[in-house]
Length: 156
Ligand code: HEM
Image 1 (cartoon, protein in one colour):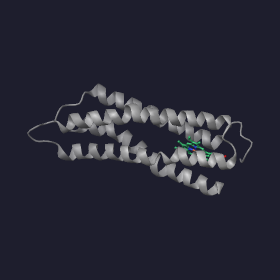
Image 2 (spheres, protein in one colour):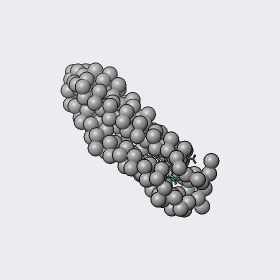
Image 3 (cartoon, protein in one colour):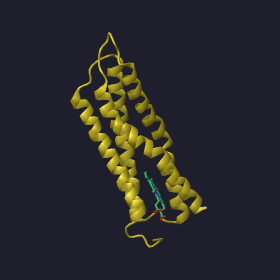
Image 4 (cartoon, rainbow, N blue to C red):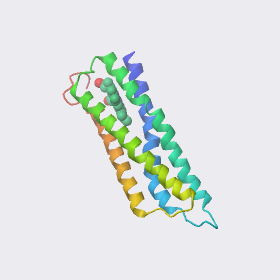
């Protein structure tokens, strides 16, 4: 049962967190590339930005399965109180917080501006890129913790 839950947990991380990482990283340069012209709207460019935002929104919802399956795996293994896991949970919560509070709303704002044919400020896409970087760094740290498990006496 533990192996089954762990497999689902890792699969969920790959399938859900992977696309969010790629799409969120592509969003700021894609938004910057859109040509703003009300007479001749860059529909392809705006379409790309909209799709990238949709991937981030939908797959971050699916990504909820990662901590849920993580909890189930940890409970089955009896490691819920381990320090490395508590740290991972805090970092996962921080990553989710950055995504929900900064990355997704800022993407939505930029998409709104582009849809109304307003030029986006460079500082806006730079700030978004910074928050996206923080999100990526946080969950990458969690992945390292999941594999190294400092202080754990179970497994390799
Ligand atoms: C609340 C958050 C989380 C909890 C409670 C949790 C729990 C766990 C547990 C108990 C294991 C088994 C470790 C072992 O074999 O001893 C595990 C493995 C793993 N987790 Fe998580 N996890 C969480 C979040 C994440 C996130 C955000 C990612 C990546 C995006 C992730 C990726 C992995 C990977 C790749 C493994 C396999 C490590 C290995 O077996 O070498 N986990 N997780």
